[in-house]
Length: 204
Image 1 (cartoon, one colour):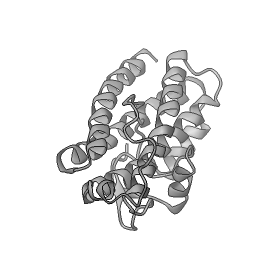
Image 2 (cartoon, one colour):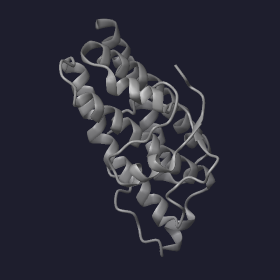
Image 3 (tube, helix red, strand yellow):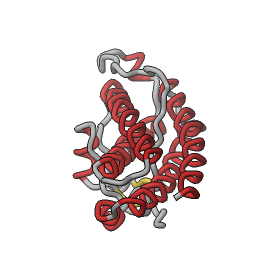
């Protein structure tokens, strides 16, 4: 599995901001974990409100700018496996949960960036951990049945591990209360889901 940091493509960012798509990164997978953390800031405050615009720092901006496309790729991976036949019910349930939770979080983080008057796209040169590369995504797309389920879980574990690293950085360095809360939720939820995926892998 490829866990090196890979820059996000313009296509990935565009898809992420479109809300549902996913980007092609590089590396071996990692699932994005579904997280239920209330409505931290789903409706972004007006960008003209100086107080809300001030309550963030560079770590918050980086967290949102990188986690949006990271989440988007998890949605794409989930959609890919959900289109396949003969996928175990537990794996299908996991993919469905991921898809349902990641979209709203993409909206939430994009809203934060807008309210902070910050770019919703990452500056070039930034990279993310746990992202799948084109080859990884092609393999997942081509796999079928149990092989596809196994590959999805293996890739999602790596993807989760990358998200956890990014979230932990925000937890310690972030300033915005909503962003810090989301980062903590991501860590807790994805660590638990990694354990679940490891059990599913053992049963395949």
